Image 1 (cartoon, each protein chain N blue to C red):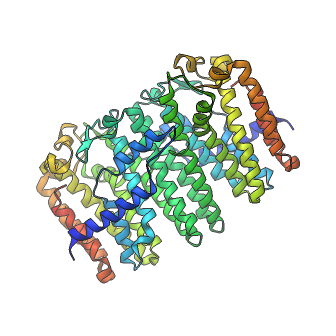
Image 2: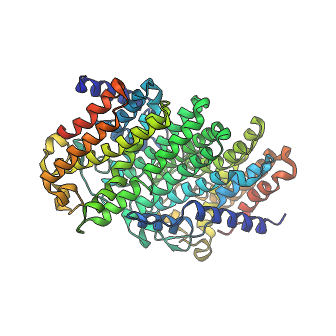
Image 3: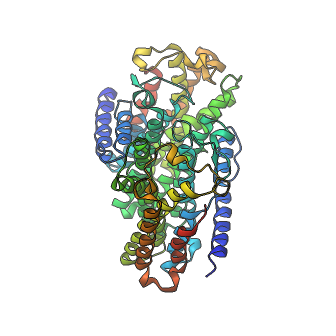
Length: 296
Length: 296
């Protein structure tokens, strides 16, 4: 398959749907919608939505059916970037090649834009459930697993742990624990929710969840590597910041070569999780291998 | 009925349930759970949960059935207080008689605690739906209306508009528009969600929603009045701040006497909305009248 064409088509599908579910605002609160749209529609790989769509495909579902979930995942991811970039957190000025939300608007607006996107994610999920009442019970499970992955037992807890770990020496176990929460949980939820809503059997959902966990770890390892080896222009944000901030990273505890070996092993194991899915899982296979060669 | 005893019993029920659904954390993200619990369990009138429980009662439902929704509403309210108190927003040091979250912890932790509470609210709602799959379609409607009331078309949009209106001369229409979004939407959603999940007929849900809208306006008018006339110690936060910040308030546009008259008219109209509910709506009647005499 042509992964580049697949990614471009899926990104376009997701971008179009995001633009539709969050139209420009009017009335007294229009400014916060402008800020939400600035961050949400300003590019991005759309990795979480694409994982969700590909997991639905892998269990034989038309991917359009899970579009609301795909959009919600991207909204949650974008809100987390906006809040992580705030001066009180990572204090970043550049994101996806443009000024961060609080730089483009101001801090109060950026806090509210993040809050608005997180809330809108659940609005979009609930809308999906309301439109398909026969699926409401499955949607409830999906909302539950996404909220768990995004909240204090997932992404929010991971960001807290990541901030606390700055400047502290970390073991491999600590780095893994932080990143399982901070990025792994929502990536795993992306795969899992697509598989669930796509109508996968319990065995299929379990196998795809195992794939998703490994995908999350490989993603984080290669993200850490890009911060060491990547290019600021291609990345759309400054590199080398993890070392400056003494962040808990894989290259810091395993070395660059060790981190690369670890990533390759995990990719092989993730491919093994897909062995029973045949051609329907071709995109998921390509996606996890792509992590090893990505440049942004 | 004895409103004081009713409120105390309901507050105790809600406090107990909040403590149960958000237990103390462990592991790398425990600090954010500590901050979430600090703000969530540190007192508060529990007005939104109590409205939700009372609306369920008014349509003949056992109020315990809507406890997950009641908890979610209080979590959303608390998250909004934490974020509104941040230095980039209202920059408040005191809340419910104690240091605000960012004063007790730090700014990053407070941002994350708010994010965590907002996410946990939807987790609790989804949990309710998962536990009662036969109710999943109604839960979907409830999640939808709460997300709408909390997000950019509701509370988040209202907070944005409120910040933008600071220092600007405002008309009564503008003040009402802001407060319908900022506080009215979630109060109305509290009543509406209780009525819906309690099994109210469409007519009952509509009547209680009209009551809820008026309740929201009266709440805001009396809140503004307390900022003019209230006592810092009783309120648990400094008073007189709206005037300092040139906030858009009812006393500012109507005068104190005019605002009081407006509040009394709205209470009478809210009572008229309850005329078909008989004794089951006694708590809702007492609650809206109580707003006129509350001192905090």
